Length: 191
Image (cartoon, rainbow, N blue to C red; front, side, top):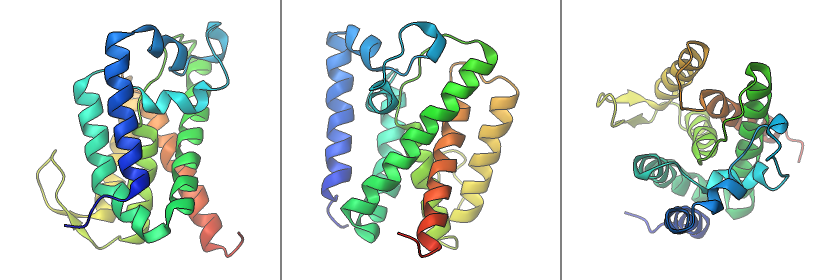
């Protein structure tokens, strides 16, 4: 098993460390979660900082598992600079879509978590390795990466439209959108 590349390792350590810090000092989450624009608590740094904070241990665990599963291989393939660009595109597009969605429904609830970045990595993985068979935890059925991405993207859209409460489904889709746009840009040959 290859060692974990440095950016993926640093992101995982940062997320775990900030989760522990936010348990000790809950005010950290208030300052760094992504608040809707109309909430009065929005600050520009939240467009990035929200991705480093998580709501609970399971949220953190599954995001770090996904980062480990998909991020390490993509970092080795892309190199550190492109990998960071992919993460940044996913995090920012997830934030933008979430802000649009919360404005549309009039929500004032904050958003936390690296899930938008993770869904961007998932989409990039599926685009690069479409035929690779992976075994998700839920459901534990082997499937090709392209099918896995399509199933999870479709589920996110369905759950977002039917009102899956407490989960930023449109942020997940926004992360996929950002990754797709950047991958298309790279494939077009423009740099």
